Image (cartoon, rainbow, N blue to C red; front, side):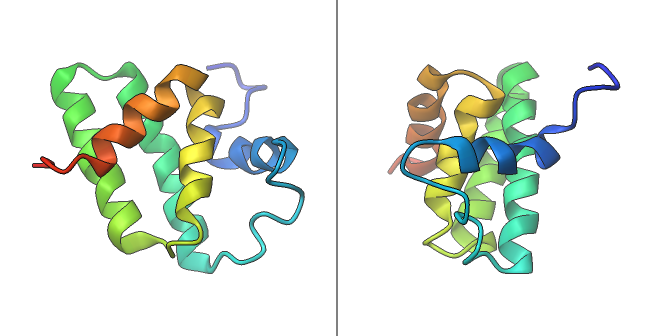
Length: 105
């Protein structure tokens, strides 16, 4: 990672604000806990991106914990929408389906 590239926990905000249908004030309803959970979620997507099978399972489990207990339900769609900022658009569904999977371990 270049020293000129900000970490994803800092760059996701600008990226989300630029997304159609989300807008400049998308993080306004977030509490401090929500923002901390979103920052952590961004790094967990990175873990998933670079991880082997074991690392990916651990990342999904940790993302699930953040979604279930670390952020308000109104903030969860922002976590989902930040996935393509870190990976690619096709991974949004791939990751989110695993988080919401009914057979979650």
